[in-house]
Amino acid sequence: MANEEKRVSGLLDDLQRQGRYGFDRVDLEKLITVSSATFGKALLRLAAKNRVRRIRRSFHVILPVEYSAVGMIPTDWFLDDLMRFLGLPYYLGLQSAAALYGAAHQQVQQVQVVTPRQERLIQRPGLSIRFFRKLDFAHTPIQSHRGHSGMLPASSPEGTALDLVRLARHIGGLDAAITVLAELAESMNPEKLAAAAAVESELVQIQRLGWLLDQLKQTSLADALHSPLGARSALPRTKLDAAGTWGGYPPKNRWRVVENASPQSGL
Image (tube, rainbow, N blue to C red; front, side, top):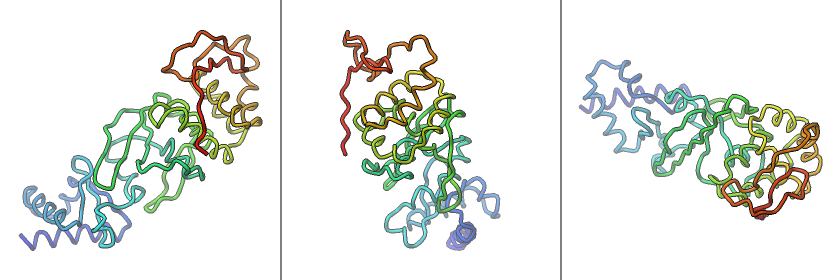
């Protein structure tokens, strides 16, 4: 049995030399002439020694010696392999994407991933990956960022801004959204923001984002959002806080946003 463990460990060493730290047990079993039960027992013994860790179903990650005490490797070492295993297109989004552009004041320990299909939270010691479903996934502008094991897709600063507003209630509310936007705005481009808004399927998200940018005194960004809307005879009224009440007050701002909340930046 110790011999089988050594052989499986050798396969893990081969993967690690190739710069790969995530693998599907089913694929690895095909490379060794032992029964599935024997392979599984060898993998369990290696897990007990903090050599591997199971993430979801048959997907595992390899733990180098320097990470054995921590019990987990950084997510960017295996995220792309994990998403291929799950069969899901994806991008890093929300606060995880904003942190790539320097908006890290509200940096969260959780990795936030946007996909076109709902996927369950992955929670392990030292690891938390939360998935957010977005129906209009394909229209989000994407930028590639270098991770430890290759390039990772992330929403652009402009796409991130729209997602922060759309999913505000899932990341701490409008206070969290405006706090991230206050820093993210430095990386946003008016022309690129207008282009992202042009393919945005929900007008209300453009209106809410514009209102927030006005509050942050980001006039050039807000104007770029509002300019194409000016051709409309009348914007529909929308609530700033989608879950809040209408409040009964007519909107007095150019976005026709009913100010049923008073978001405050934490900066």
